[in-house]
Amino acid sequence: MLPPKQNFSEWFHEIIQQAEIMDIRYPVKGLYVWCPFGFKIRQLVYSKLRELLDRDHDEVYFPALIPETELGKEGEHIKGFEDEVFWVTHGGLEPLDVKLALRPTSETAMYPIFKLWIRSHADLPLKVYQIVNTFRYETKHTRPLIRLREITSFKEAHTAHRSYEEAEEQVKEAVKLYKEFYDFLAIPYLIFRRPDWDKFPGADYTIAFDTIMPDGRTLQIGTVHHLADNFARTFDIKYETPDGDHAYVHQTCYGISERCIASLISIHGDDLGLILPFEVAPVQIVIIPILYRGREAQVEELSRKLFEKLKDYGYRVLLDDSDERPGAKYYKWELKGVPVRFEIGPKEAETGTVVISFRDEKKKFSLSFEEITKEKIEEWAKELKQRLRNRAIEMAKSKIKFFDNLDDLANWIEQRGVGFVYLCSSTECGEVVEENTKGSVLGRFEELPDWLEGFEYKGKCIVCGGEGYLTGVAKTY
RNA sequence: GGGGCCGUAGGGUAGCCUGGUUAUCCUCCCGGCUUUGGGAGCCGGUGACCCGAGUUCAAAUCUCGGCGGCCCCA
Image (cartoon, rainbow, N blue to C red; front, side, top):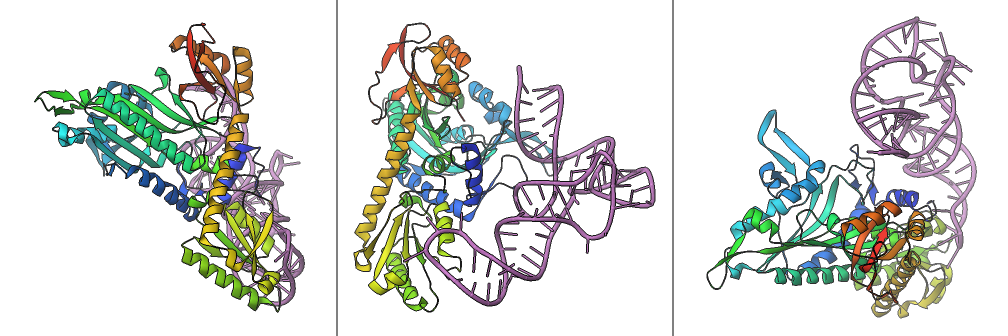
């Protein structure tokens, strides 16, 4: 039994374990074990991410250890990370001459090599990505998939371009890519330009994807950074232009971590457990035979026949012939988020039919064996996705409200909602909002989602009355 | 940085104050019988006092140290 989802923090903690996503008993704070089932979800979700990136990025691998001398080169960057770096200080018993950092992110591992790879304009644009673990010494309370000391599944892409404008185009491309990814997962997102004080250390600007969790806090599930030539100057990454001049490259980097899976679980799940979109469900279809004594043979035969047919279609299908009772099996596979369930009992065996039920709906219906076709199942998958998306959007909408005074905004955030306000770009006004609401300024909208209507992009700053932009404010993870 | 709380089977717990037989209960797990259309029942079984030192005839229980975890405040 799960705690109700209304008690989100407890629900999340439990579902991670009960659905066998992670084992949280590893004896180091902030490090967790991926269980086989959880790892399958990870694999399915990340293969989509790979598919999207492989369109025009190359996958690479850079080392996990970064010498202190490289990590410290870019002033802003190191300032942003120095208090959370894990250091390797010894080789065996010998202290190292140059300490080695476990990558908190890979800019400083990659860019010295980019300098070697990039010689001429013909080498540009360079677009690579890797999916690796990164380490951050989190001191606040850690949480599986959300706040980790070892991020196990950091997809980071890095690109280099001829100009600021070309890099900016790439930022837009990356945003498009991430939209496609999260649309695929049916997870709604808000796209903000982070305020200057909250941008990636070393970046020109940062665009972030935030989703709204069931408890009304926002979770950052993706970031895209325009690095301009900041790192290029530090790492001396230059190329020869067609005219024979030398110029610094302009770079971008963008990342998504296993927080995408935290959002997948949290946004779609319910009191009974996970609800997974068909494409990323480790078990897409489960068949439950209902065996009465003396009448097993027919039921088993039809179940087996259906199992073979679905396997031939290429689905991840499971025939649960364990000796638990049917009810217990329903609960078990609902917990695991299996999108489609087929039940076959003596009645169905008699008539050659199958009872069908979807994970997100209560109703059951039946079809004949022949009516269950690949086309039908594809259609169900599509409809499920649409229902999940609609439900998620309704949830998100219910937690969003516009404010034109700080007290009401503070109240709303206190009660765990996401507030929209108009805010100018000054740091002072941003600080006033954060201090008065105990929330975080997420930034102004980079673009408004199509499911939000009736919001004007510009208005009077809630603090100073100057020119302001529609801005999100919320408690964050 | 300051303060507080807690470590008992895989998970959750009782016992600790006031030291004393085979360490409680639920769950999970294993075996058997029985059952199967929304978490069945009965019988049997495996499995634990965080580590170290001290006090004592005797320590899960008291003391000190270590390690680990959680919470609050700044």
